[in-house]
Length: 240
Ligand SMILES: Cc1cc2nc3c(=O)[nH]c(=O)nc-3n(C[C@H](O)[C@H](O)[C@H](O)COP(=O)(O)O)c2cc1C
Image 1 (cartoon, rainbow, N blue to C red):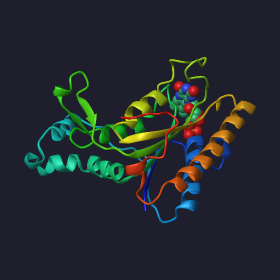
Image 2 (cartoon, rainbow, N blue to C red; image 1 turned 30 degrees about the horizontal axis):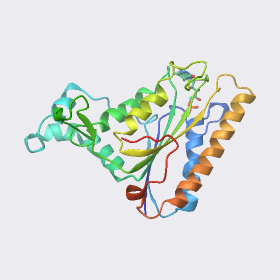
Image 3 (cartoon, helix red, strand yellow; image 1 turned 90 degrees about the vertical axis):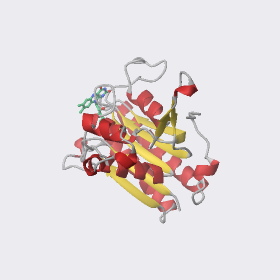
Image 4 (cartoon, protein in one colour; image 1 turned 90 degrees about the horizontal axis):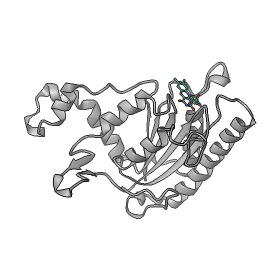
């Protein structure tokens, strides 16, 4: 049995009275999840909708608690870190992580950033050692597969695209994938939502197809708890 962690982050719902208002990123991610569950109904499944239920922002007291050794923490500090502990436990337990995200103002939603801020934590998900020279930060987790699903209104944020350099969503997710312990990463992207034209329809359809194909492929190639030791190949070649 493997564990699948699914994090959605659009503030829009999956399904609305007016379907034009449905979250595209959530619907594409759902295609992946439903396909996965068909192949692997016994897997553990953890779901968070941080768009609708955002994690707290971190605070000065949160940082103080993080940098206080475990045995010296007050009960108040343990309480401040309870959500972070829970979210990190969910990431640690996961073999496969699916994160869906809209592009808001050229980056990720503040709600998803708040989730990452709770998870990126010294001695829990990364350690820091100046003896490593210019790269003192090293991820602690490893062996996970990450699938990101993004949706944007414009297009051409990729390398060589007409908006190259303006899109910070995919590069930010790639950088943070390392802290999540992902050494295999796949990206599914939908574009053109603001144009509402044939390009948009094709983009969504092809993203949904890709989500379904990838879920079938990965769910079949994933033997019970095997991802951590074997990996399943990557189309980005990202290694922490
Ligand atoms: C607050 C807000 C900011 C947005 N900013 C951008 C942007 O900077 N670039 C872009 O291409 N699309 C932008 N969009 C369009 C969304 O990325 C697009 O509607 C996407 O489909 C939203 O994801 P969802 O359908 O999963 O909710 C923005 C939309 C909203 C609501």
